[in-house]
Length: 323
Ligand code: ADP
Ligand code: F6P
Image (tube, rainbow, N blue to C red; front, side, top):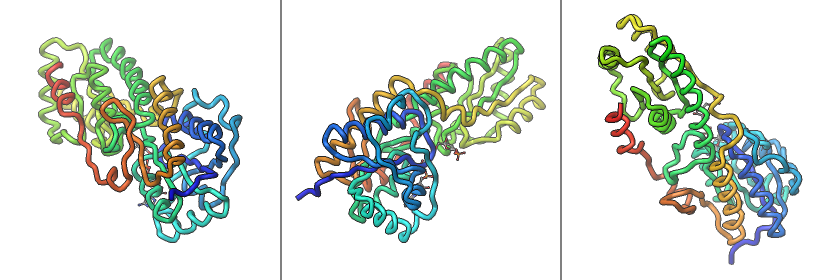
């Protein structure tokens, strides 16, 4: 017999992402609509261990759907990586009557959810990260907003780069993954997209391509560089020294993580939040929700964590042929 769920906790963990608030709101309101109580756990697993637990009602999530960041705050917590920390977390859940938790975060956060599930607290995880680096899903909460923010910023850099006939390196986030760089590179029509999954570290060849583009009459040379490669400033200096073409580096940084979520992030995060509650009410646990092949689906967390993801090969190929 599936365990009956009376009180659902919700937390955000790891890096924040636009759309997390829409997911929290959906969890709270869907749970209330099903007669469940909801507790918000502040500051991720750190807040769980510090018992930063608040009652949530429909009003607690008013005016949040359009806001970036996370109203529950987020944190990284090393104590929760230890078995003792996880045991303590499960006991605190029981003490506060929390019999299920929705965890919104990246795959590090999923591992925490997996551990809580093994300790008897039913868990559902939602993919919340701007990096799109979660293997079981084609969509992660925040990616759409982040790439739109970065795209607009890169358009602006491109304007001034063209006026000054410069080379510009724009570094985007993504940790070790190149999804943000690839999407921005395509959306901005960049001359060059440097992805950790593909870049051969041959800066001399890159310099040859910059020179050749200049000879063909290109008025700018836009390089979208992924954070996983980094070194944008030193690369810019190398290019300028070797070519005589003025080169500037811009690191977009945390601006990519903030801002009002796009329509897609609001709607998908809302759907995933509501679905998490539905799954918990069906007695499911240790599941992660994803979006694959045009549908919202759920996977066992252990299976999801074992999956691998590469960047889209065809998108990468066309990024090379369309310059
Ligand atoms: P993300 O969730 O964005 O991948 P992190 O990798 O920083 O971000 O993970 C967020 C938090 O999840 C960590 O600070 C930690 O509290 C928890 N976590 C990460 N790995 C584990 C693990 N192996 N076991 C339990 N909890 C973990
Ligand atoms: O995972 C999201 C992300 O923004 C990555 O793209 C980036 O590498 C990292 O978080 C930055 O983390 P912090 O906010 O701790 O600097």
